[in-house]
Image 1 (cartoon, rainbow, N blue to C red):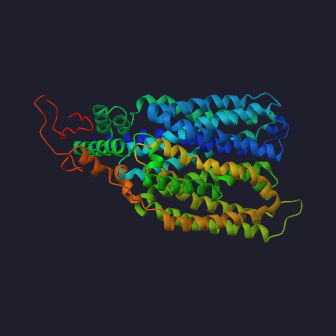
Image 2: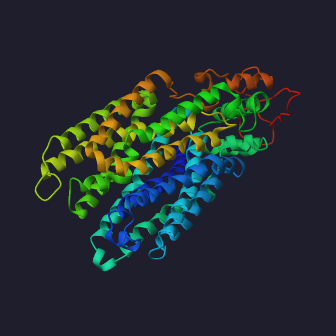
Image 3: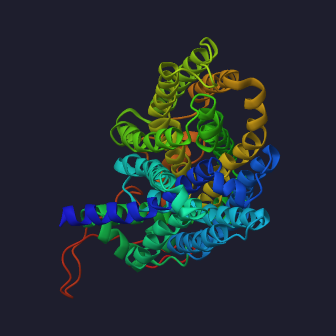
Length: 516
């Protein structure tokens, strides 16, 4: 029975993690089509500035969704509904992009905006759902698959593109349209499974104090009744405290000093994820490889292999994040990425160009090895751990809104870099990698002094790490619970239910608490 509950918990979390496939696929799609001659001809060979705009419009849609739509959607309709709505919009947007009329790049751009909105909603609800339904002792391990699924999305896109690229003469414009349309595959799969997933217990308590529904969910994903009642008690205590003492609205983001501190740190971490250079590399690796390799099929193959190794490298987070902690991965990953950026820049700058353009094959292989080594350090650290840390540090009253805002700071940074990087790279070439090297060093210093360890801390007690009050203990005082951390065992009535535990609350004038 224990194995069934644990397996079901993993199943529910993995469905939610599938939302990240959407993000990985879309980032790879634009990277692949920009090297496709049929796509370039279909939209009249966009210039460098228009090129950047096409990529940037996705981020604009995602930012709008993350800051103004995703949080309220996940809080009022539920995490499952938010994931479903985001997936549905992504499907519609994929069709808009794939069937944009010839020479009508504006329609393709509209599809990019729309897909950003859909993914902005889904990418907010997904990590929140995983964090709220998963036990704290394995939360980091389960959330590691969030970044792994990003690599799965890139893997699908790059290999589909590689296959289509082998038959461009036969497929014509369908060589890029098929790549775009494959994006509907995963959101359809997610939508079909959402009816079989429970809503999170924390959402049920937050919305109407639905104790019976929350208890039923916990009994489906936890090992024993004592564990169910302990977690239920902690959730109720924390939410009562947040609503009555802090704020039941998003104003707590600005009113509570400890939440403001978390918000600012998470902003830096999420923008830092793009400052590492990964976001730019993922969007413009084809452009970078053109300086090294002259054959498009070779570039497509390298991108596909990069995505494949990305899946393998992300798995390192599964066994490290709950063992060594979030800070360890941030610091080691940042140092490793800085060294890789330095290595790639020096190899490229200190070796001569081959005849006919590009680099010699040994030099090209060395550069590709350096970039593959970069993702070895990036994937389990600033790739996976940034999402893990962001999804687990905020209290229930602001969690969805805060995660939406913080995660979209990645796109704020990406908007800036995607606009100027093509010009930056054209003017500076591989010297631009020194910038990313320096950024990684600065990020390591920031983590060392500013980011606390959150490994295996329950969601309801994480405020203490940032100078806030313990929401469980303070909520227990409001509810007049003698032991705020443990439900008291008692025999159940004679109705025939199996033995369990329960909690009796003394009525508090500030809020009516229903004895279960």
